[in-house]
Image 1 (cartoon, rainbow, N blue to C red):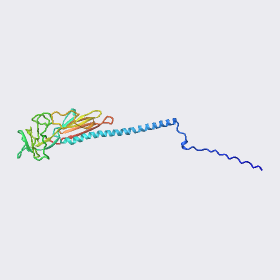
Image 2 (cartoon, rainbow, N blue to C red; image 1 turned 120 degrees about the vertical axis):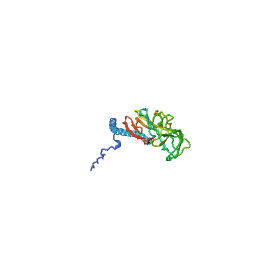
Image 3 (cartoon, helix red, strand yellow; image 1 turned 30 degrees about the vertical axis):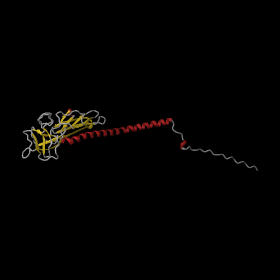
Image 4 (cartoon, rainbow, N blue to C red; image 1 turned 180 degrees about the vertical axis):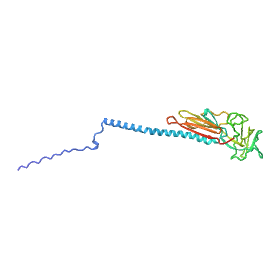
Length: 279
């Protein structure tokens, strides 16, 4: 009996799935298209963010300009109220302010008993009605009855007139008795008050469209001519587009400032300061 031959086994062909690493990549055209789309999206985001960022930058610049203006106002608010009466004066078309700060003050003896301040002849000493907090320093100026800030005349501490209302503290002065260079003061004080003063102070502004400067200058002697060189002194504030001082009254100083720059929008600032002392 013939046995039929068994069929030869053959492998069955099946599709094989390709793993992720063997899949084909992007074509150059697809890559360029993807980059172009990304660039458009990035540009859109930048345009969307540019206005908030610009507004934030302008806000910071305006805040910095406000800080500069407030810095100037704080200095003036600290110094001007304690200035010698009627010593504030303005020059440079309103850009320069000068005044004389008070170091100390008291009441002089005008009647006996005791050593009075003689107004009828040159005197070199007088008693203080209430003792000063400290012994006056030699070289300080003594001012009696300051009525104006003129460069000449007898009632201005700035006056170069030898018959002005100033004398100088000399050695031997104490808290209860002032000793000075012999002086006949031109007129008594309405309040029987004398002032001890030192170096004047000037605020000098040099405005500019791109942001000018405001400087504080001191350490110089009292003189008839007001300093007008706006490069003198220490820098107090920058960003000054405009600045003006004015005397509303002899005892009231007004300050107008414009600070910042044109890109952020400048800010305006106004303040007034009163000299609280009287002659």
